[in-house]
Image 1 (spheres, helix red, strand yellow):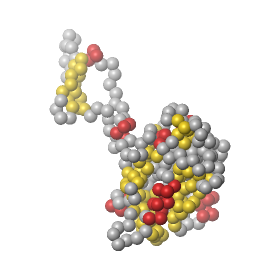
Image 2: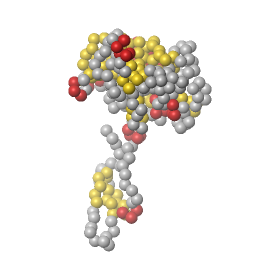
Image 3: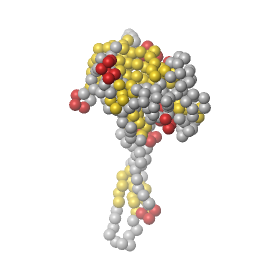
Image 4: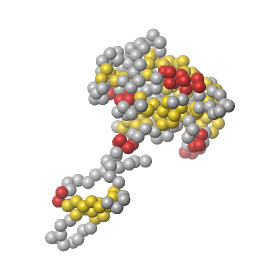
Length: 304
């Protein structure tokens, strides 16, 4: 829902007498009246209140506040997806054949992007080049920004940042990339249910819903798919099978087959392999990693 800088009702009173001095009368919610001389008004416009739009929306699991949507760049605006299941150009249904899912490509538009190289932000945020990514071993970039791809020159200037935590940069410090231990804890201790959301025309978007086990319940992964209701979604975190974008291409592969969610650190001693959470119809893998040059989904967490 859009919110505006002024929540007002305009009441204009115009009189046809040429000698009349005009005023604009503004009646604000609550009854307060503001009057302005027409001679003092140069322009009237409505602007979206970005601070209100970016009020953190999240679900808390194991003490971590996970965003209720993937990070997206949408026609010039950075935002979180409106719904937990949203990703651009989705592939509907469940596709279990890995070979087929690899060959099936969905092109990512230049102005609607939600798969990102590891460790990029600022001027590099939207790159799909195989030559641009963050590549320093064992540097945790969650909540940090840098001017170089080796993560050596840290900066707090959002305009100067070119590498680092893209979620932190894009949301002006409200969200960050999840740390590896946060992803691992979620995978190991959560109750994971394979399922689908029914959207327009009865189409299905697949993924996993993860919740905290209730009293007497236990952590597990359930790989029989079921329909997930809005009530189900309100209790946990849904991660869609949004696939992965390969290097030097805008093509997203594996959509509808699996989801690959970035963490904030590289995989052990590798310089071009980043840790991520991998999910597909066979299960949940927190020990996964993938090429830094590939574009992965990002489900941020709230900065506290």
